[in-house]
Image 1 (cartoon, helix red, strand yellow):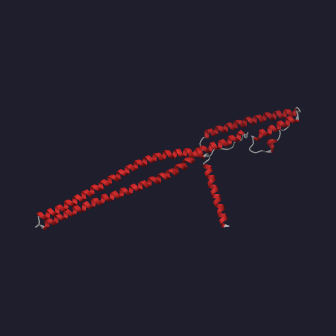
Image 2: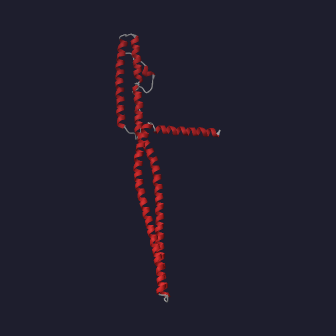
Length: 263
């Protein structure tokens, strides 16, 4: 029993999602085409910027590598020089241990400083490499997020254009069948308001013209009834009036099908 209920709920949720998708994709060909154009243009710009940023990051990494190599060369050279200096001091002043000790301290300080500089440069290289990887991940994630955002925005924006067009097409088909009452309006935020207002004015003018024709037909019916015209002619005029009234009422009512009152 529970599984059947859960299945019905899942089906209902799936139907709701499908209805929502159809609601926003009223004209999939038009909406997806222009959304695709928007996505392609923005992604092309992002790709160009990504290539430029990638090149700059590569240059920074290459510069860091060169700096590390220079620091290593300087360290090795300093170490070699310190070894030679120690040997020279030992040869020049074998009987002066205080001088040898002082020189060794200074050379040891130089070695420590060179090692510290080399460690700092290597750490900087590691940080640059990490920042480069993070930048690639950031650009990739931002590109995917932007792609999804642009797709949703493109569909929503084009929906604001396609929605009014879809509504006007439906209303035009209805007006084309003779139903001249249009009581629908655009949603807040829809585009093409001027075009829709022009359509409403057209429908209002056709409705006014139809009302005038009905009024003329009513007057003719009254004269025909007074003059004792053939009943077949009067019935034909009544049928014509009923057809004309169908386009002037929201619903088919009995009063709209009744003949005009006799004088």
